[in-house]
Image (cartoon, rainbow, N blue to C red):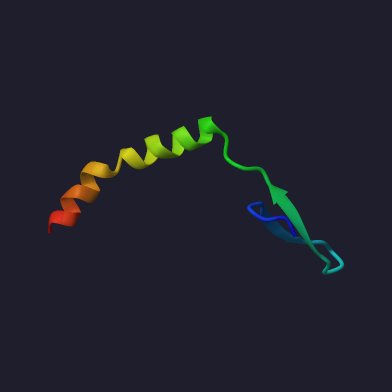
Length: 50
């Protein structure tokens, strides 16, 4: 099993389990995640102070 590679399990109709390789995040997807999370920063800061 390779290191630093993520897999997703799936089961076929016979009950066999297969591991499918999940592609890593590229720079664009990583940036999208950061932009999404940044939307919640003001709320998180407000909740943290309470």
